[in-house]
Image (cartoon, rainbow, N blue to C red; front, side):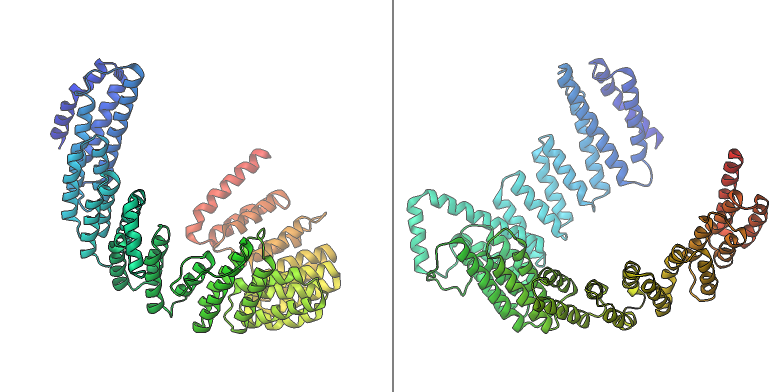
Length: 605
């Protein structure tokens, strides 16, 4: 291998000498280039071939060629292009050939090679690459797509692009990507034909005559697009995909009859699909052509507001029909999502009309027991803004809150809204009566609700806060575990450290315990005006018993306390206990942390 690499490097010397001679690079730069090229040559000649090595080599040569061009432009150097620039280009061409030969399964290399050939204007090469790629990868739909797009975008050859797409679909009749590109290509072709015909008055009159002969017939320029769509419809059996084709057709002028055909097929085949109804309703909202619309224009007021009202009303009617036929949560969600989008435009007219439709739909979905949590929360937010108007609105608001928690009892957000309303409106007794049932349903997920109740109690009075704390400590072990630290803190602030110590000793005996609980007690002892070493050491001793095997921080915290506020002589004994108790995997890191802490403490001392 070394001999072969040396030979290749020797072959590069004339090229490098020319670069130096015409002053593209100085001696040091040439030396660095030669070194880099040699490194890459060794990499690609290794027994085990690696894609990244070839990519790196190609990229380096590409950057070198770019730098040469920049320096030629800057210094006006034009000579020796065939000896330098073309030599590098030829080497890159050979590297690409080697790459696709050694890694033929990676399509990226084929595409990169084609782009390179385009960059160096080697167009005859591209056709050969495309041909070889299609021979090797005809089983990959993506390759047919790449070939078609290359012909369309680079060669501007629609006919070749069409051939690649149609041949690809013969082999891959289930490829959505190929159907989409073929469909778009035919619609583009239709647009080009109709644009040309518009410029030719005689042809335009002929087309109008043909249209009048058979109004339901697909125009000739759309026949191929319709054929592609039919094949997709028959083979794919996927409502989302058919809707995507419909939306593509919508973007092109003169495709109304094609859209009608697609919609008729959707209604016939997918009447059980919520997405079909959602599409139909949204088309009504956009004022788009529908197959069942009356061809005679409606006599309506000539104003934007009336037109918008009619479109929203028609859209709503479609959804109302849909939710009667398809009684699912998904169908209701699509309906409400559309109404929410309509209501988002707060600056537009018909605000009350839109809001009324949304509230009606929300109530209907609630009664049908098909309303999702996020829509309940949106509804509650709407009603909360209205509840200050009168007693009826307030009553309605609470009925929805209660109905929401009954419908989705596992929702923390809905319980939060309900309990928050009761507490804010001074109905503490009713709120307290709900807590046992709510906690039984949510278990430990009820923690934020208990926190809210405690916070409300603290605002009201010390007595109410204590009652809330004590209730929370009894309801659920995991809730009690997380409430204990804030309970101790509240006791210190309101009753003093002695009360907190008494509670700490009691709660020690009640599982489950938590590291945060003991750390909180240690912190509370530490911030006292006069530290009691006996009581301050107590939480550390308990932490070592419960967490000393798997947690180095409890030992480090204890050592730090003794060094700063306790007895430094005890540090050695704590260290020895830690080394014995800690899991073997943690001992080394503990010793390292201890050494750093001790060194820092000694330097300060």
